[in-house]
Image 1 (cartoon, protein in one colour):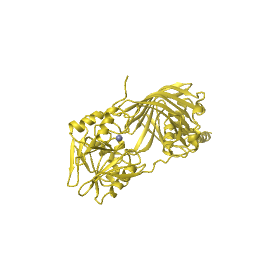
Image 2: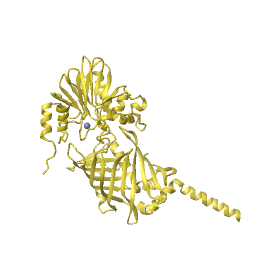
Image 3: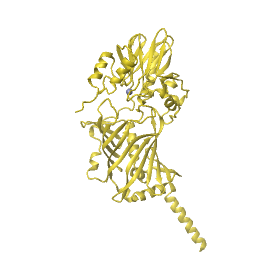
Length: 492
Ligand SMILES: [Zn+2]
């Protein structure tokens, strides 16, 4: 009898283990804490309304300064869990000096494998496969979505259970191969955060982490009233929920991809890159082509110097390759005008190509960090062939001069938006080369007077022509006229 009882106990033990491994049990407990497995699985849609803020990562005045912020209002996100559909609408307003329209209405959707955007005039377009993948991950950065995926989606696996800092942590791998880390509060059993790894052109491998805070009860289901998403160490999005609604009447109606977007082919992740070279003076070329990020090449006695390696590895590699076709002299230097991500995106490939980097002194630590970071998710040239950073820092001004060329570099002083910006001046041709001081296509020129002061009063330069990183080549006279015609939006 005693023996038989023991056998039964063992059998029961084995049996319950086989049914629910501990990894899955933790998620199952989370489902119970959220309102019960059946209740969670029965939810059709969740509508989240609220407001918050969305900082511009990589666009601060100084590399370690506060980020410029978009204030987000009229935020509304609806998720259809079973259908894999999501739509997010929001209005964002720039809380910083922005050269274009400072309010933008955004409307983005996901319908299975189709990502789409709806413009303010109602036109829907298909978004890229990358956008589709990002939005799927974004949808899973929600406690109900991740718990449902872990418990109920065929071929989704849960593994790697461990404990840390009062949280139980598991790895969730979806049927599509997406990997997410789910942390569950050990005391409340509620999901505390979801983390996923992503590639960023500037920062490389980054964790995107969403914390779920201030749960409230909505019809027996626990839902966060506060979401905080970080990319690496930066705040990416913070949402304060004003209303959580389950199974709102008609909610599913807005989720289907518009026919035009659905039938269109997804645009390529990376549009083709064109680099043109236009001579703008003896031994000076403007490298334009596709996009609105240009570079300039200067030819010295025995080498070439590039001004700007913008955007990302692909654009900057194409620019470097083009520069090397312009002369038999070696390309040895790249000036990085400032630290903003769209201007320093080519830093790593320039280092990998052996170029010496010239930049303002305040960028030194930040650039050292960017060069040292790992890019294992999407390995770039520097990840594959690490090279040391060769850096020349400029303290206010630097003149590069030989028999063929003279280029003066100046720090842009006292600018409200650009704290680390270097612009270039060629005295022989009276050419100004600049990034973000002025763009002929901008709606407003908030810091235009500061730019004019830097050129005329502080540096006492005589400029005939401005050769920009953004916008069109213009005479200096036209530049000043444009700046003064639209200094800021009219206020009444
Ligand atoms: Zn720029």
